[in-house]
Length: 199
Image 1 (cartoon, one colour):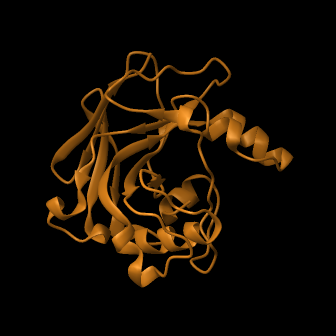
Image 2 (cartoon, rainbow, N blue to C red; image 1 turned 30 degrees about the vertical axis):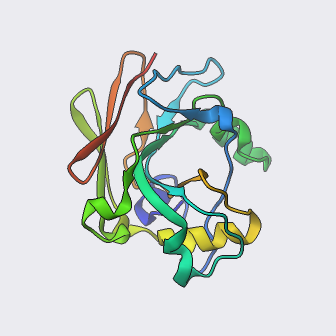
């Protein structure tokens, strides 16, 4: 819930004064190397959520926002897959999101690139997702409610960050369902970093 237009899209509003909504995914959720994503049989609607992903490069706890940039060294585009119908049911019941967000293969990540190689500030990056050759979602990190550095700092208050940890930084408006045989391509600036098929 880190982009205002996405909050509206889901009929929510998140005040800038509030802390970000945080949830975790098991390591079995990670999907890399262009392997296909299999839509699970427990959902009628599995939505893509395209996000900037940062990779933690050093151990850190209770990190100050002004030093947070030292704790991640690479970025990519990722998909936070969400079993939307299951999420709505869990929300109604006041239950955690683990089942709708953390299932196997639900955290797809592309190829990481050094953050310095992008030639732009982390809060001035454009990314987008194409499905079957059509752009379906666009984001600009300048539109984040909570910056990357503030996310790193906030999360480190509760969890010790370790080398290799990945932080998905939230999705802009434009989420939608995937279908069998869809072909997804994720772009960061002019770099295609993510490509896979849906099965």
